[in-house]
Structure formats: C-alpha cells, structure tokens
Length: 192
Image (tube, rainbow, N blue to C red; front, side):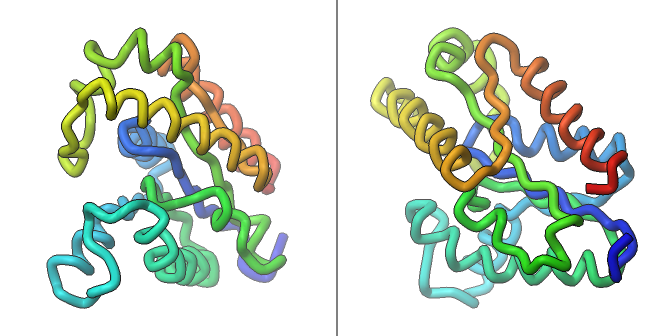
C-alpha cells in the first residue's frame, strides 16, 4: 500500500459522443464514486469570465492544455485525501493521462473510449446522434461524421503511442463498456 492508502482516480477520455458520460455514470453507480465532467469545468471557466484563453468552440488542442493542469491538481488532491473519483471529458488527451509522479501512478486508472469507423457508419443515426450529451451541439453533417471517424482513429493512435488503454466499440457499445469495466475491476481488485 502506498503513502496515500488506496484511493483510485479514473480518468476517462475520448472524442465527443463516445459514451464517456454514460460510462462515468455507470461507474459512479457501481462503485459509489463521485464523478466530475470536465465540460463543467470548461463551461464554468468560460461563463465566469475567468479565462480569455479559450472558448467552448475552440479545438481540443487549445482547450485541453489549459484544463489539464487543473484536472491533474484535482486528481492529486483527491488521492492525497484518500478519496476516489472519476473524471471524464474529451479534454482528457492520452498525452496527458500518464503524467503523474511515481507516488500517484498506482492510484490513477486512465482509459479512453472510442468507436471504429464501421461502428460509426452502422450506428450513427440510431444511437450516436440520439444519445449525445447536451454540450454536444454540433451539426452532424456527412462532413462531421467523417471528422468523427478521423478523430476516433487519431485517439486510438495516440492511446497506443502513450500506452493508454483504449476501448473501442466495433460492433457493440455494450461490449466496449464490458471490456472497460473488466479493466477497471481488475485494476481495482489488484490494487493497481
């Protein structure tokens, strides 16, 4: 056991509309852990006027670095106080998710969710577009569907590059969630 006890901080990244919020809510219910949507931090900073560096419509490459330092500090504080917590958001990029000092690493469970191009083609209109979060207000034209496919491929590649577990729905969203739950259950029972 580490100097902090055994709290867990689960960090769920992935591009927009991949089920991060739904998955975080399932984890909250299963483990009794609070969760914090990074969208709330982003919108709070924007609406309060406490940032002039980004707006909610900026690219993730502009937004993510500004929010990561705050999210990382919140995660570390949670661990130091022996509290488990879930954070989720498209702003949690693979290149940041592993950036914790050695003492914190056993307590951090990073992962990303994504969809294969075939899954997007097959399920776009009957599920992805229907269940998107209220923050997801973009228009889903054919051009944006193609962008979604490219963004998911990029996320998968970056997860591989930075050694972050990536769970991809290829045929079934539920199967992706089962695989991610198995990963978390295993890590939590082993005291990762």
